[in-house]
Figure 1 (cartoon, one colour):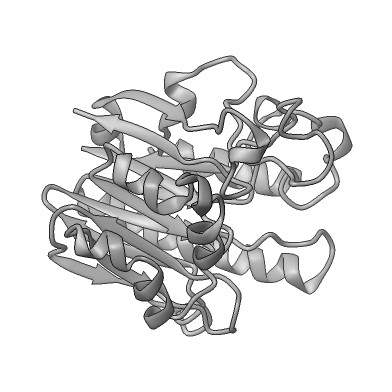
Figure 2 (spheres, rainbow, N blue to C red):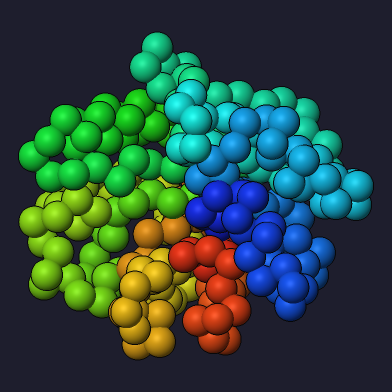
Length: 265
């Protein structure tokens, strides 16, 4: 099973970006070896998403999506080459309709597409992020108890360690690298969840998966690693490769994130 996750930074923009050069999201998807692709920040309702992905759906990709409750924000989806046997969103009065989490059962595994809020230190936005984190944590605990192979993929908007952010010294008091957020990821992993990319690329800077559009961040590889595959222990043991599909040039990007792909045997 090959699983890719990517924050598309707006599905309609990602489809149009570099389309003249045949290098946007749809050509990438057509060339992809992935069996499952998790998308975040689609910024589209279900109808708009289906319209944008119509060529992929014509190629027999199956789509499950959770549209945003606020126009132009959030939105997550999963594409699969095989049909889903079940589709779920978070059981939460606050977050069920926010379009930040969707979970599917495929043949042999559960795969979730997750998009954590960005947050903002010492504001209500950070408190909302923390409530969402607690909701996701509860779901992940239940998944471990269930025992089914599972991987949660997406934009977690948290750089876990100093190796996961180039300019970490400038961000220690900012959302995305707060000690409490980093500890939350540490605690999740202590319960059994495995950061598959880090396990396969230990003790190195990156590989980063997000770079600002501004300045020379991409050219200088001054990025953040915030797009994770967190797998249960049994599935993580079967991960044999992980890579960030970084564009060769700034001009060839169709999102500010790069796809992150993991192969499980």
